[in-house]
Length: 166
Image 1 (tube, rainbow, N blue to C red):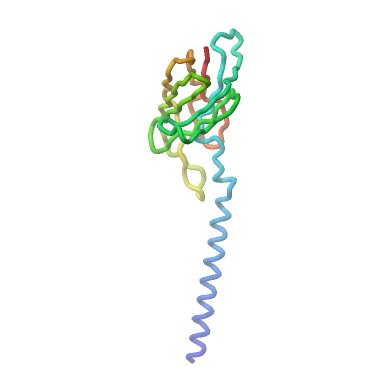
Image 2: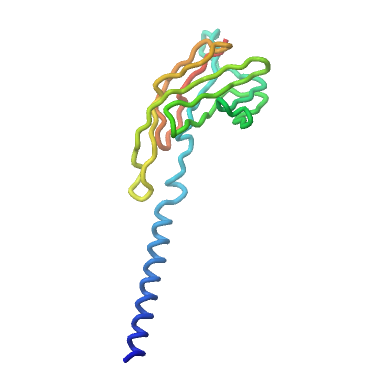
């Protein structure tokens, strides 16, 4: 009798372990890298435009270094030319600021925004959707800024802000 009970206990453990492994594999597979790929999700997409152009022409900045305010040691961009930016927003705050430096000119740009939890799927949970409320900037060589699409939502890819350069 003891041998049969031990054999049943071993069989039961194997069954529980097998079910646990199957459930773990299913849980990991249900939240694939495609489901959690949040390309551009919390990045403000900006384009540079000429403030003097009558045709809304885009423009390129030369010799650009871009870093977060207070983070000069961590450049996000250090390029010879650029006409678009993808700037990540801090989800721990309601604002994010950047320094944009070109040759001898330095200016800052500050994004103020609201966060709202948005469900992605039942298996992968929620993420933040953001709404840009305003953009502040120094006018060293920025003429104006226009928020053309204030929403940053899951799996969207759209220019949010136009920066008009003198």
